[in-house]
Structure formats: C-alpha cells, structure tokens
Image (cartoon, protein in one colour):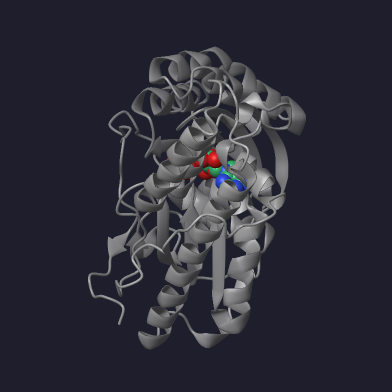
Length: 367
Ligand code: ATP
Ligand code: FE
C-alpha cells in the first residue's frame, strides 16, 4: 500500500508519500517560518492564506518527487486535530477533496499521535508498548504508547509548552536581529547561543515542580524568571532598542539547562512509575523523544544519560522528522492502514478539532 499524508496544523505545509514498508517515496515541505518571524508571531488568517496558496503545489511536488500519479495512492491521510483551526481546515478540506475526486479512503490524523509514531518508521525494532516524550511548540507530554491509537497519558504541561517558551525568550532577546540567528527558530537560536556560553550558571533558576510527585511539566514559571533576568540586565546596561543583551549566551545556557533538568527529572519519574506498574516489559524499555524541541542536542544528550542509567533505549527521529512534516502524517496513515483502524470512505462528518487530548489519563500520582 502507498499512503499520502498532508500536514497543515500550524505554519508548515507538508506532504509526504510513504509505503507500508516505511520507505519514503516522496516529500515536499513549505515553511512559513520567515513570514511569521517578521510579524513577531503567527497570525492565523495569514497562515491560512499561505497554506491555501501552497497546498496544491506541495502535494504535486511530493507526487512528482515520488514519480507517482494520485491514482497510484491507496489512501490519503491528513492532520485534523489538534492545531490552528484555520490552518487545519486547509489540509483537511484538500485531503477530502482529493479523496472524493479520486475515490480514495480518508484517514484523519491526530498530529501528536503522528509525532509519537514517527520513530517506528525508521527504527522498525520499536514495538508497542513504549514510552514517549513529546516536546514541541504546542505540547509537552509523557505517555505510554500501548498501540497505534491507544495512549496512556502519564503527564503533560500544566501551562506553556517548551518550544513556546524558547520562541518567546528568543523573541524577547531579539536574537534574530543577529545575522547568525536570523533564520532560526527560537529553539535553534537558544541552542546555538547556549553552546557558546562561557558561564551557564550565571543566572539562577530553580527546577520547576520539584516537590510534586506526578509526571506533569511546567515551563511558564522558568520562562518568567528568564524574562525577569532579562529586564534586570537590560536596565543594568541601558541598551539601545534593537541591541541584544551582552550576556545573552549565558542567559540562554542557564535557561536551556533548567528546562533540560526539568525534562530529565520528569522522565525519570515516568520511568520509575512505568516500572512500578509494570506498564512496559523489561525487554521493550524504549523512550522515544519527538516533536520540534527534540531537535535539541543538549536535551537529547541529557535524556540519553537518564535512559542509559535506567536501562532504557533512547530513540530520536532525525531532526527533519521531529519538526512538522508530511511524512509523519503519511506514516501515521500507514500505521492505521496496516492495523485497519480509522479508515473512512464516508468522511463528510469528520471535523477538525482545535484541541484534542491524546489518550486516557492515569490519575494516580507517581510516588
Ligand atoms: P505541536 O506539535 O505541539 O502542535 P508545533 O507543531 O508548532 O507544535 P513542532 O513543529 O513540532 O511544533 O516544533 C516547533 C518547535 O520546536 C518550535 O517551538 C521551535 O522553537 C522548537 N525547536 C526547533 N528546533 C529546536 C531546537 N534545536 N531546540 C529547541 N527547540 C527547538
Ligand atoms: Fe508539531
């Protein structure tokens, strides 16, 4: 079977074509990042119009790259939840339109499920159940993936997502005013700056939620402390409006360090809880980390140490599959196609959803 996947949940218009063996046959991606950077954030109607403008070409480019015609595709998968409604609608409508026109089944996709399952495409040894940490621009969640469509949620962010915090701080630091940073995402900019720091301990931060025994996350507290350090430093130096703080590298490093320690701390709790409840058999102990923030090498290396110590295998998809793309949607379509679940020949009633929980939540605290 061959599945075509469409992604438009946020600011990337993506299309991927993947076969049931997990082979990538074709792909195309159009990023709106630079446009939104100029506006200081995503303006939904603008994102919508950019998706509308590029969707047809992106799908055609993926088909051309695969050297396939749409008739050779077995089903079309598209992200229908969660995401920006105006953005989601473009990919969903276009996917349904193609399905109608060419009589193909439609596979609606949950964007976070797709982030979680991508790892199985290039590492075929990952079997259910496995543990997943999804860290991205809109989410932070730790979950046991029991099956393609069955997630046990151990914890999630009670406020901001880590990517959102990186983006906000990078913007407030005006990092993109510096040429080396001008095209980077907030997370990439902070990672680069942090890697050049001379003293990552210059700024003080406390690890969030250290006293709580659950697996939830919080990033808004450390984000605010970071902004507070920033204000104080700015006053100290009396800088012109467009200037970047002299100590920005150390501030980025201090912030990256505290978020990394928080993530590691929560993952360790999650692994302990999984062990106590026997949720994952010893021979399958795997942690998948995905979502855009998983591109961060500092975070990945720290998670690797936690995993090594606890006898878990850490798997991280290649960076271009961690951020939003059409391939992960196509692969999620393949997973559903093979399992025979969530494939629709009647799809008029399938609607987009702005927010949508992933799986059932475990209410017991981790002790
Ligand atoms: P969601 O998947 O929750 O809907 P999204 O799709 O907008 O959110 P992704 O495309 O998965 O998010 O990830 C984008 C986020 O990843 C941005 O916030 C960006 O700053 C962050 N990011 C990208 N590269 C890095 C990096 N090297 N380090 C940290 N964060 C990064
Ligand atoms: Fe995403």
